[in-house]
Length: 113
Image (cartoon, rainbow, N blue to C red):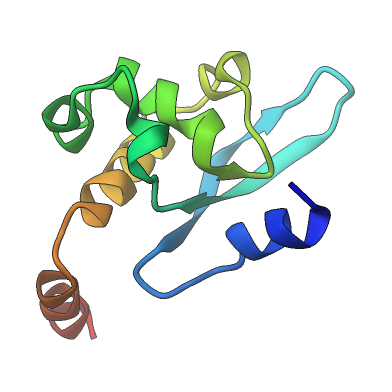
C-alpha cells in the first residue's frame, strides 16, 4: 500500500472516524508522548477473530485487539494497555458508535448539539 493510500485511509471522515483526546498520554519507549488517537471505523477484515457483540459492549480484550488495527498514530497492543480507564472507555464508546446506522448517528449528533 502506498503512503497516499495509507493517508487516505486515515483521513478523518464524518461518521467513519473519531479522534480521542487522551486524558493520560501514552509514553512510547523512545519517550514520545501520544496525546490523541484517531480511530477509523473498522472493516470486516479488521474484526477477524473477534465477536462483534463483545466489541460493541466494550469488552476490553476486544477493544485492545482492534486499537492497533485502526489507530493513527499506530498504537501497539502493549501501548494500548497503558491507557487509563477513562480513555479506554472513550475508545470503546467510539467503537460502539461505529456500529450505529447513519440515521442513529445523526440523531445522537442532533441531541448533542
